[in-house]
Length: 164
View (cartoon, rainbow, N blue to C red):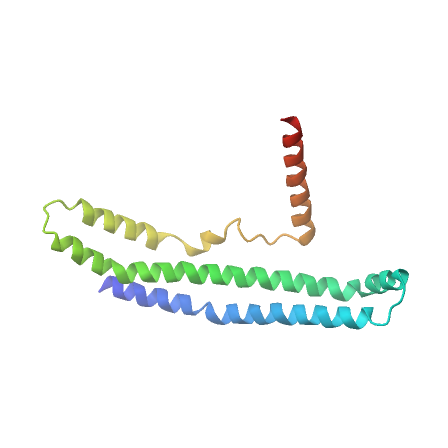
């Protein structure tokens, strides 16, 4: 049966994302722990604001990559989880298709429009490329680009509100 085969294929695809999700979760958590430990050790026993400022400035070459790694791993985990959800949805659709088809056939109606709509919906959903769900939603831009973009958007909102 085609839908059973599709459901099995989607299940296998969905399972491929389990390990990457776990991996990126671990990388994210290790990054946060490393940032915390490093911050604690570098700021320990500092008395003045000037000492704290110098310590933070000297720790930037280590802390910035750790922050970047945490953000990067969070995005990768999010992407993998989103793709996993897409395949789970397709798997559920493929599994339920036969059940819906039987229920429509049990109506014993001469009108085949329901069956055609079911088939059309199934084909549209199955033909949808799961990776398209990531387009323009999980940017790979730098932190600086994201901050600048947010500042621009906020400035535009402020200008729009002041012109009203």
